[in-house]
Amino acid sequence: MTAISHIRNFSIIAHIDHGKSTLSDRLIQLCGNVSNREMKEQILDSMDIERERGITIKAQTVRLDYRAKNGELYQLNLMDTPGHVDFAYEVSRSLAACEGAILVVDASQGVEAQTLANVYQALDNSLEILPVLNKIDLPAADEDRVKQQIEDVIGIDASGAIGVSAKSGLNVAAVLEAIVERLPPPKGDPKKPLKAMLIDSWYDAYLGVIVLARVIDGTLKKGQRVKLMATDGSYQVERVGIFRPKQEMLEQLGPGEVGFFTAAIKEVADTRVGDTITDEKNPTAEALPGFKPAQPVVFCGLFPVDAADFEDLREAMGRLRLNDASFSFETESSAALGFGFRCGFLGLLHLEIITERLEREFNLDLITTAPSVIYHLHMNDGSIIEMHNPADMPEIPKIDHIEEPWIEATILVPDDYLGAVLKLCQDRRGRQKQLTYAGTRAMVVYELPLNEVVFDFYDRLKSVSRGYASFDYHIKNYEEGDLVKLSILVNSEPVDALSIIVHRARAESRGRSMCEKLKELIPPHLFQIPIQAAIGAKVIARETIKALRKDVLAKCYGGDISRKRKLLDKQKAGKKKMREFGKVEIPQEAFINALKMDDN
View 1: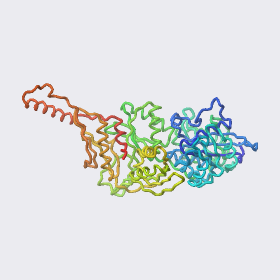
View 2 (view 1 turned 60 degrees about the vertical axis):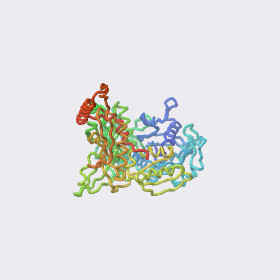
View 3 (view 1 turned 180 degrees about the vertical axis):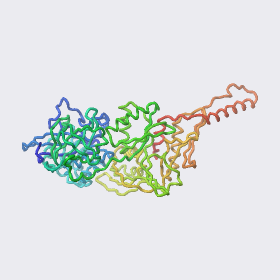
View 4 (view 1 turned 90 degrees about the vertical axis):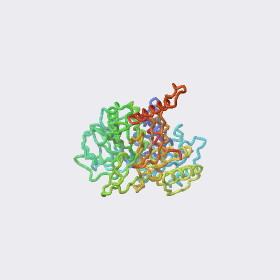
């Protein structure tokens, strides 16, 4: 075991695309963990989606051995954390397992919204922060301006910030020296009972669940019986090891060390991020603070395009759930879409990743209904119902009032686009809380209803700011709102997959725009199709798709008008009968396109 004074546990925090994974690659290469022949970009990102999008989804760790300039050998444990707001809880647990963090800021772009969110989490965990300016070799890089921005916006001393180019490897060795000199070693007592924090877990087809843990006190040994305090499960440890980034087996892990163990655990749901691991016979007195189970924030329905694929979809979701305990689902049926599942996600990126993985890895064609959030319905009898699906809304007279979740959003945007961003936030019922400046960039803090953000707010924000705005949010509280259920009727039949909850003031414009879009998206049938938007029994908007017509008068060359009238009446009766019994086919792209908010 390495002496605890020679261990450094650190994480790298950055905004998307500021070079976090590239810097990790260079550190791994410099410490000689991977040969040049085995080296590839984003070596810690194992999933195809992570590599394509350039984002980190699962936290990864790697142990590096570094001989410093003073001749001593140090053990560096690097924890690569996700950067996106959807995975904020995983980031907070990874940071709680570290003593220091490297803050990577792009020297040409400066501080962004997610940089702020993750830095504040690191400061909450009392971490020592080491600022690093990346991409200093770019022509647009301005180190002095970005250092000043770090001091103004974040409020930490940036005079000792290290300028590097992670891509070319320029000055990366100085970062390793600074980790050893400026980040503190962990604290821990090997004689105390075992206390370890569960950082992450994933499923392996051969070994069962692999658990990533940071030992606080005591030692974690092969053959030991351990207990997980939150789930109350006890298991016998079969393997103990570390990642370099390949697996390497050890006999034990001591205080301050980060590694993995396997113990024939069957499901990822049994190993929750942030749980405390202790010895079954000699347990620790109290669990680590801050544990909370993952809570879904966004819900949507997933349906197979072909109803015959329902069982395949069920199996695929079961297999994905093995690897991602924060993803939840239950069966539901829809009159328009048949059988499917109601799924809960941590946020919109999580939703996107899960649907993309289902389509790619399991070769499924899916229809996704409109994402919705959890509403609290306060009933007249005093009870409170949580509603995930607008189709489940009870009768209006039974409801006293409805509460919706609100978020606090931080938006960083260049001054040129500030007006457009403020207008977008106002249009989405936002309340401005703060507006400050850092150089030429404005930092706006807004309170917004999550309902308005959940569908296409991020896309709209990127388009009004030409891609320069960055956005981060956290759930704040629930507030009462004047909300109504907007139903869409096609040929007098309600389409439950298109029903949404909207604010009363916006219901008419949303209903009208959805009817107009559906008119374009649904192909004409042999009979006339009315499309209506309704609140309860009151229709607030209507469009009509004209019928495909056959020219029944083509064979009449002149002659009496009564003959033509007879043919037209016969056609009219046929159309009426068709409309009563005809089924309207709604193409799958109509579901998503109809729900996208319009540009205004």
